[in-house]
Amino acid sequence: MKYSGIGGQAVIEGIMMRNGSKYAVAVRKPDGNIAMDVKETHSWSERHPWMKWPFIRGTFSFIESMITGIKTLMFSASFYETEDGEKETPESGKEAAEDTEGASGEEGISKGVLAGTLLFSLAFAIGLFSLLPVLLASILRKWTDSGFVIALAEGVLRILIFVGYIWAVSMMKDIKRTFMYHGSEHKCINCIEHGLELNVENVRKSSKQHKRCGTSFMLIVMIISVFVFMFIRVDNVLLRMLTRVLLIPVVAGLSFEFLRFAGTHDGPVINALSRPGLWLQNLTTREPEDDMIEVAITAVEAVFDWREFQEKNRGELDRPCDGCPDLTP
Image: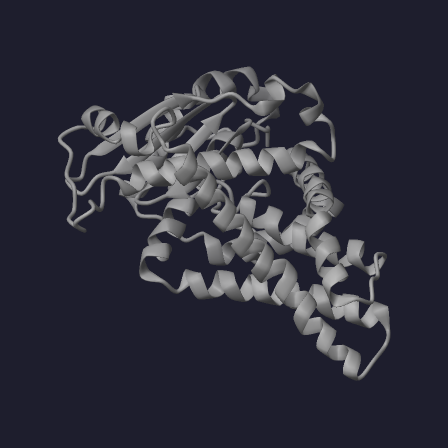
């Protein structure tokens, strides 16, 4: 398998695929046509090279990904609900992109709305996955003074809360469809990186799991935080909560480097360490329908020349006879 450098995310009834500074959002509109929005985006690290430093770049990459994700979600949502709650059916993808530019385009989106959404998302995640486990684990002080036991309990609770949250949202009808698009994103990337022609048939038989997935990143963050916080013990609950927040960039940086390495390397150790994240993707990815795969292929081809990629790397691409088999245990 050869690393292609492309990645993406699922949006409402669609897919965003990114390759370098270019990304495309393809959305299946209510009338059945596919709307497309292609944009150029420039990383902060282009102006500030120090943001590319190892163990630092992960934090900035995560924030940039969240910003792009919010923009693309707004674009996709614009096709499905107006202020009155009615369904929209724009006549063409180009017209739709122009009509929604003021509301969700990169140039027209309100910075206040974007900042507010980003801050709320971060605050919610920090509160649920960082602060709540600290509060729950502190109850154990009634029975033990062991900092090791409390730190371990905090880490286990953090992982359980995260997995439980993923499981709960995966039961929602709309989220199930989003996870099907998520599966089509992974399948397209796996199809390309395993040297198969990018078409519906080959994508369908490719794996819906991928080591570079954001789901794996979040789980790695949870696991690494267990070990980091075992060595940083603070008795006061409020100070312990503060240290958890302040050390988020450190944990995110370590997790990013691991995921980056795992996504570009294969081997028994790396594959074994990556497996928990792949298992969790069984919740966040589902087998897509053919029309969803078509949307994903459209997004990929708008930003990535997969034929050129495969031609250049023909000797490093493997072609398993059954496509890309799932890594489900």
